[in-house]
Image (cartoon, one colour):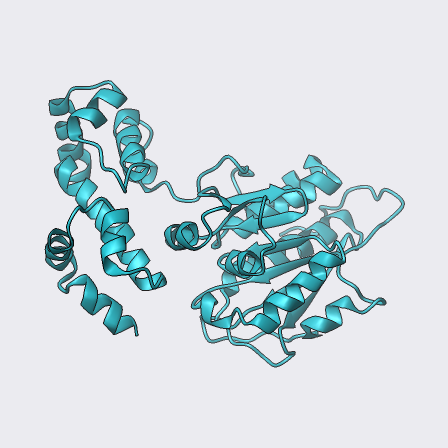
Length: 331
């Protein structure tokens, strides 16, 4: 990188202090990407636009999911000290987020909300805010693997499958590199798009993604944009899990014949549409079994299976074990 990338400073300089709460088994890459964007904003502007502090709930070191630790600035309570009070607090989650969301933690997060400090979450940190009741009435997102269980546990949340969501004083992202997109959009709202463009160039980002971008679009990467009817068909299937559509209905909705639909699936996804739809529903069921305590029969019904034996048979054929064994293995 060249060092000649600064822009003319504009007075007055206001430094925004952002706090990062690291949960045990947090996703290191998502956290470091967010900090990296703030660091680059300071470097390019030639000013301390942002500073950051890193906390754990108790002040004790926490290990990321990759087994690494970062140096902490203290316990979460110290983020409320008048001399160093953070202006935004971001909860950094990762694996097994539920077991770390203690009552003590959620009570502490509510203190930040009562002080009108904006709150956000990276990756599964969204769960901690939802558990504390701090996302009620807000748009939010979480990693796609957790969407199904979140919708079951918090049915009133305005939960989306987008990369990130910014709704008033709540900032959430889905994890991975989406923290880059979240921070770039936050910086754009404060310091403008010119600075963001320079930051994105340094990170070799081909574009700054927006809230409208979906966090998971595997079909587009597998088949490109040349088969929009196929993408529409799969999107329709994903939106109708509990009450599956017939293949004739899917074909009719996307404007092709059933035979054309079957040809598209066989050519580009190498399976029949009925098989793809079944595995889609079973995948959703597996997430619910692994992430919730919902009874197996209720999981079956919510994923479009009318009887438990049919669900168990289909599940066993795909995953090599019945759903009841999946739940017991988790325990």
